[in-house]
Length: 230
Image: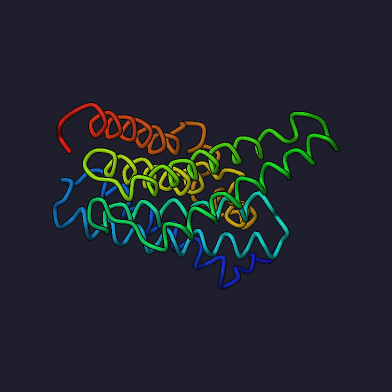
C-alpha cells in the first residue's frame, strides 16, 4: 500500500489551518487588547489567509464550487474583521468597498447555483447554497450600513471584529477537529483519520474545542453588545 502524496498547496493549507487554530484560541483566552492578544491575533489573520487561500485554490482546481466559496468567504471575514480594529473609529477605506463587492458577488453566485441545484435535483439540494448565500448577503448588508455611517465606533465596531473573527475560527476549527465537507483536501488526504482514530472519535473529544468556541463566541458577543465593557 503506497502512502499518499501531499501537494505543496495541501501542505500549506493544512499548516495554515493548524497555526490558525492555535493562534485563534490563544487570542480568545488572553486579555483583550494585551500584547499577547494582539500578537496572536496577527498570527491568526496571516495563517487564516494562507489556509483559506490554499483551500480555495485547491477547490478551484477540482471544480468544487461550494468550497471555493468557503475559502473566499473566509478570506473576506478575516480581512474585514481585521480592518474593523486596525482602522481608527469612524474610518473607512477603498478596501471596504472591494470587500462589499466580494460578499455581494459570493452571495448572488451561491443563490444562483442553489436555485439551479434545486431545479435539477430537488429542493433540498440547494439548501447549503441558500444558507451560504443568506450569510454572505447579510454580511454585505452590514458592510453597506457601515459605509453609509462612514465607519463604526465603540461597541458596534468591536462587535463586527468579534463575530467575524469567531466565525472564521469556527470554520478552521470545524475543518480540523470535525473534518467537515467544507475542507475537501483535508478529508481526501485521510489526515483526520490519522489524527483522530475511530476510538478517539467515539469519545467525542474532537468536538469539545468546537463547543468551547461556540460558548465563547456567544459570551463575547453578549459582553460587547449588552455591557459597557467596550
